[in-house]
Image 1 (tube, rainbow, N blue to C red):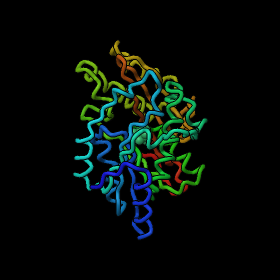
Image 2: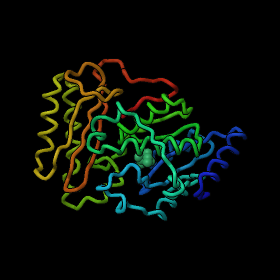
Image 3: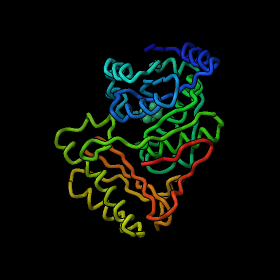
Image 4: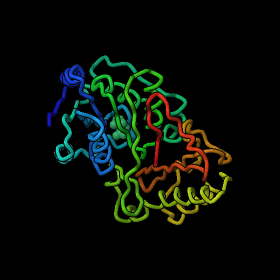
Length: 299
Ligand code: PAF
């Protein structure tokens, strides 16, 4: 496995392979790789001839009060996982390489970024959209994979790739969970034993909401009430939002009339956890958008 640190060498490597007709798969990450990343890497490995994983803790998507300096950076372990999974290139640029002096462009996807995570973290999605656009420009992949765990991020990437004709196929892969349902996340390592014990309540709440919809309940207020009650069993979890939304626009629904996505964010101590579940209506059509060669979000 090659480790590449400069944008010029990365771009040159990709262009050479593209000229030879090789298809390039790409999994962008911030490192601290877990089984969720592993499943993205494996899916990309199966679909492409060559595979690039980027490891870059992107300062532009953290606010000054967030955990940038404390973000886990187990680089030796990350590289070992990449080697194990047959990754061809680990792209590990520095912050200065990605944002040299004089850098001034920002990519925004204002409507999709407005609610939910965007409300809690106002500059986050501009940072994500900018770095993903930049990474696509450098790595120039045919296919890039994202996890459904960050549902709003995946929707936003899909939008920007279409809007800017970036020519990258985006595939979103199902969330990988711990045995008790907790969605895998690099931030789970911050949870204390007590916090870890109650963290699965978020996925349990979303499951409770999903069961209600599958059972025929269409009243969003009632569904949201049950999801909130599930979480409030533990007084130390604070609900940031629990919502039933349109799976493409992420606008909140008041009545479940089509496929929906249940989105949730909670805070346990200083740690924010997010999760989501897609729900199809029983007997209904999938309703998920399949366009621009982009696969639907699935759960
Ligand atoms: O999901 C992540 O790890 C990051 O937001 C991403 C897509 C690698 C951009 O920094």
